[in-house]
Amino acid sequence: MIGVARNTWRIGGFPFFSINAYLVDDILVDCGTRWEARRFLKELKGCDLSMVALTHCHPDHQGAARAICEHFKVPLACHEADRAAMEGRAPIGPDTLPIRISNRFFTGPAYEVARSFTDGDMLGRLRVVHAPGHTPGHCMFYREDDALLIAGDVMANMNFITLRPGFREPPKFFSHDPAQNRASMRRILEINPRLVVFGHGPPVSDLGRLGAFIERLS
Ligand SMILES: [Zn+2]
Ligand SMILES: [Zn+2]
Image 1 (cartoon, rainbow, N blue to C red):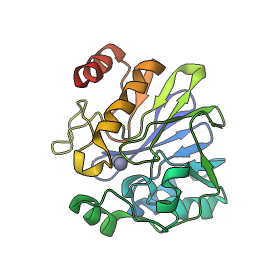
Image 2 (image 1 turned 120 degrees about the vertical axis):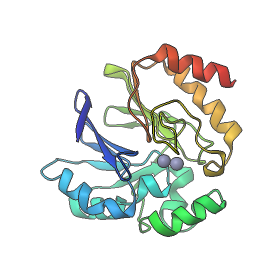
Image 3 (image 1 turned 90 degrees about the vertical axis):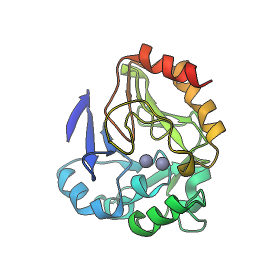
């Protein structure tokens, strides 16, 4: 675990720390692929977790959810619109070949969502910011106290081939509605955070550069 802000740690996962989860206060935001359950349990040993919250239901974010929730006896939370996919009542989408392949190899077992949330809800000190498009229930989480934004996959700070840092939209074949996702990216500008952390790639505090990237897309 690497500290990225007060009471906030980045847990980087396979391959080459390219998939991030975050421990924010006592909430675990996202939890890698199903292959990482053991590593999460080791990294989180001794932590006083209160819940696992998902930015969205994709194989690289929900994989170890059941293992962690069962081990720590904590609830799983995600947006209402991604709930059926997490509970195995609907397919994880979009229905594209890369998603079908990653579902097959990386998706963790279905698990009951004990708490579904919607825009504006509070999870501890985190405000839910619904940012649909990548998935229908994709959310960001904002901690007002220190203006920290957990952006999930609304955008990435990583090239998905070279794994080098750099702002990117998520690949189109991983998103339900790329145009809607692009509109959701603009919520980052409205929120005007001081630090942004991503599902993929390192954190960014240069909001000028980030803002210019988002403006250029629209
Ligand atoms: Zn995703
Ligand atoms: Zn992802």
